[in-house]
Image 1: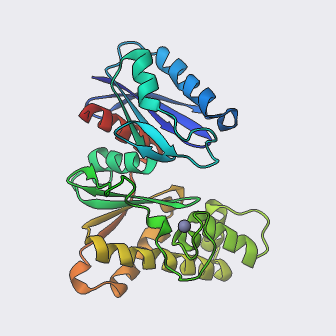
Image 2: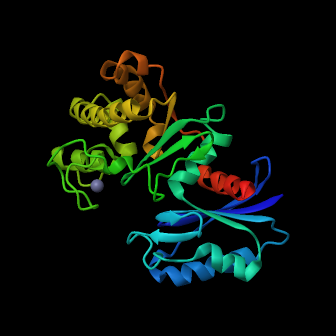
Length: 294
Ligand SMILES: [Zn+2]
């Protein structure tokens, strides 16, 4: 089986040809050019699909909330303007008559990790991705738990500080306003009056023994851990997979593994915390797997 998979983000689209065993036979990246709008993006996808021959399935992982049955976008933020309501599955199947699966990017990444990555021998786990916000997916029996209306797993918008920071969802005190990578970066820039910071710069300062940075990072890791305490008590998972570029810093997983057990009840403490394994291939692999399973 030959599957063409896309992972559509705000800045880049990852494209891969994947076989039934989950091997990536070829891959490349093109800019999303999101500013040109949703219709232009859709037309570019259709054009790219036309470049390939003998496809059996198409799998699409995309930013935004997805109706995976209809294969359309329920809501996309301003990172992908004009993407809301796009009927991706219908447009592709009408143009090429190739069965197409469409899935939200965090769900797709979780499925990728479930079948080919960090959770490969574990079919019931949580997957959280830390970046600008915090996305999440709940996997049970190798499938995404979706809830009644398809949107379960918004860990980033659970409230960890009542009446706290304003969040772009309209709420106050959401987990992601304290525990996302962006939250760490803005606090470092604010507290240390640094004009530009990112994960790499911050952890380099930590390595150099900067004590102010260490305090800020540990505060941030405490916020991450407190969220996980809630999720562990709700889901009783055996595994939590943490994704997002920042998780490549071994200090993070070490801190959480050491500290989480102090705040959870003893019978929950068998939970393992691991870093996502597939990096930015998780989305195309998960999308391909969902296309295979259609
Ligand atoms: Zn929120």
